[in-house]
Length: 92
Image (cartoon, rainbow, N blue to C red):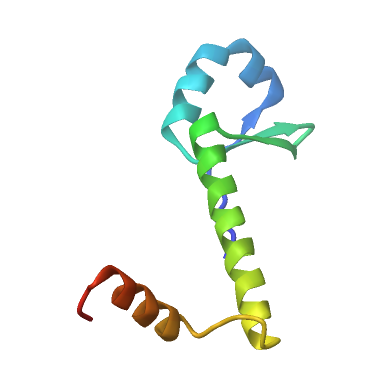
């Protein structure tokens, strides 16, 4: 499900109130900016953008790992966990 902000701001408003907009953006996930009534861009703070990138990369990593296991190229996580626990002298 895609979440969209209920509030949108015209590009003109964004330019005229840049400082206020940047403060608001720093507190939220994203801010849609419209031009001629249509969404022209989505502005995010660097912090929320970085978080989004990490989530995407993590998802891609697990998708690749799942594909490898499905192709018989990986090992079962229980087997790996037990092997690591034995090497580290841990009890599961």
